[in-house]
Length: 520
Image (cartoon, rainbow, N blue to C red; front, side, top):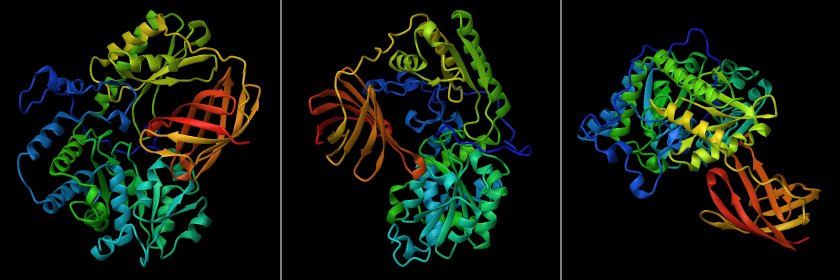
């Protein structure tokens, strides 16, 4: 996902490159019909989109390289023994990356899970088939520094490991022991700025013979690998982001003994790992993506992305008076792409960035970009990331932004004075996209139009905030990833007497409906 980054040393190499983009048509079959070019999504009622946000998994990541597509097609035409394939691919990945050995997994998350199993059970089949029940295991804990708690750590605890959070050197020293299977680190700048940076973590962990696993999912692949050089034993990457390999693939690199053990703990072998299957197509496609990574002309790609953003900025600024632009350069390894921010005075223009983002998403063609906010609260704006654009998309995006700014969509209705009081304790019935719950409660206090209080769910309580406009109530709550996962609820509905009802938006967990009764 966006936002992951780490400090880049001056000696890091991204490798020599290949210039030029190949045709989107399937070169192995010569397919040129419109349906094949479009992917066939429209025939099942699914709308494709222009991706100006980046490598979000929910937006299907990246587009695979033509060479990856060819490798997948070629791999699909013959049979192969998968353990032999894993050995051959692993050795080749080691040669390409200088990382010792490699493994293709069904995504970065699966790579983290298999790596955790390797550190817990070491490839021992008797232990493997017990996972995730670690009763009787010597290694039952994973240490995660506070700076690395995040939504992806579920891949670690999925093996059955208990997460132990530490915040200081002394806490880590005390937590390390014979029960510690591994230390997990989420690659980002705040790790490098912490007293528990990667080198320090590795020194402390290795003194107790504990391996260190780095999650570098959204980063560019550095050769030699920056994380392994800093002391990590294993590092995992997404295959369908910067590498532009299969979206359903990832790679695990590092110590050969641990990577080989991780393969034992992955499909086609049975036990918990059977659900993390990697086919010959993903394996060879991922290998092709890494082979292309060391050949691609990264400087030329970056220059092309920058030129697209300048095209958008020039077009919009010239067509819409009062719009300013800034080109923001990345500082780290994650989602290494420039970003264009466009700003305007929201009151004068009569529209905010989010309204235009929503209109572009609903429009034709469907365009995905992000809202932007600057230091001046009077300004609103848009952010365009060129990372996943194709040639010509920049002109389409520019034209549609101009259209929206010149003839903005209607602004959301302004809030009205409250005509109801939402104070009290409310018992909720929630119907999710799938499933339902009657365990949730809202305890609210109303001060004018402002709501504060708590939202208690099936297991977790969190702060709630909201507002009242006439008889319409909005309540939001969130449970942040600093706890190792995240949940967000946005309740909107109408209040009448002691009853409320409406819609609830749960972000990645889709939408649902809710009804509430005031109990006190």
